Image (tube, rainbow, N blue to C red; front, side, top):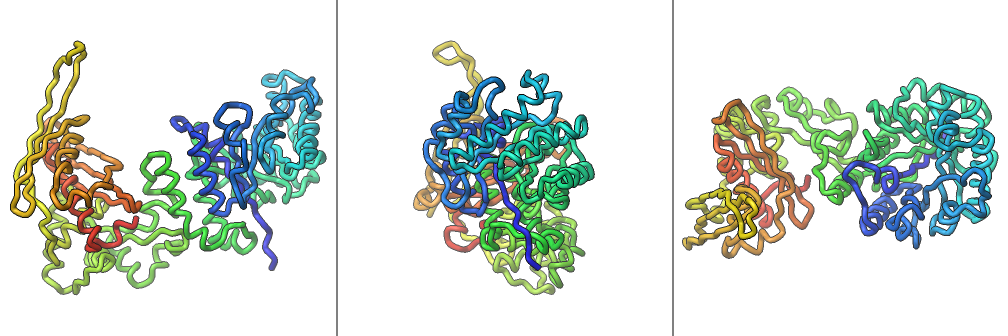
Length: 538
């Protein structure tokens, strides 16, 4: 059976830029466009040339090689010809392959937001599409608020879509701008649009995630006939975000309900890089990846219960809906107080540590892990700390250095300008090859000061940790009161892109932090010597 082609349209650089706290520079946009281009996306929407200096500079030249480079903008204004509209001129001049116009398709918005007649809006859609085609650019129209508009006045919403189609738009995109439409409504309305005479291979879907159903709405639209899907990397976007292409793409390519009927422009090799794409994008945004993200999250193929781990060892399909490697992820059998021997054996084997099930050392390790988790440690979220604990008990860990003492001081004082400041200072004494070294550092808080001091002078190992950085620091109070037990989780990474997690627990937050910091450095030194397992590849 010949499969139909689905086209993927990424709006990360335009709609995604409306996410609170995100503001792309031109350099950011160039880097992201390259990532999208290499991933096999059909259309990369880069922004709104003429609306701001960044987007104008970005569209000064074409930024993609394979993907079609798309400029976004408004249809021409009512009462002004297409040739005299400055906004339209900026779109036509841009170094884009295509133009995606946003057009009102709800008569309420035409009246209130545009302040023109319904007929003037239809004429603006038609003239704008014709102008793009006249400039040899592919034209498409985002019918804004289409689903709400259809429910309020189906005849006018259809008239807007038809005006774009009849003017020659390659794609007429139906937008759930407010994000409140349900999948059953999307399916029914798209079917009516197709029945009205606009073929599905000229229709697209643009869904927002305000009810958490943007992916479901996009898939419902595909089932009803649309053949272009718009979305963003990791689902970023205004309010609750857009449809997440990182979730949609594996579903379209790996689930028979879609894979048997449709094909995309993304190869199996590019699909296997989607986890890396998702994490690289989060890295560019300087935020921690969501560990429970479908397909690509660190927990997407993780199991914690012993009975599940035992079944996974016999046949991974028992608890995995797709092979992890198909999306560039991997299986994780996590160790915790809920896990049995199967968890531990599988995790140790993955790290290159073969221990027979009847080895008394394995029983001792399981006992220690369960005792420590009762105290507050959480090894399922700190794989590096677990590996170090296991190697210390089973194979041994080199003593690269030892900390003989450390001290932290916090002083609140007025500086020379009379400003009140809180200063944190740490002193760390480290023994390396029998030589004691003392380092002093100030930092933004006691943990930062301690981190700087600890890594200030490790003798012959100093150059090895130059690229070690702390990516995230989390504190959790495990019980109430000022004498509470504190758990600290630290995420670290280095220049290779590897990430690892370490944990510390104490009734003193500084001590808990120091434990996690020590494990992070030791793990880095182990990794440099290829003495650490696959956890560093996460």
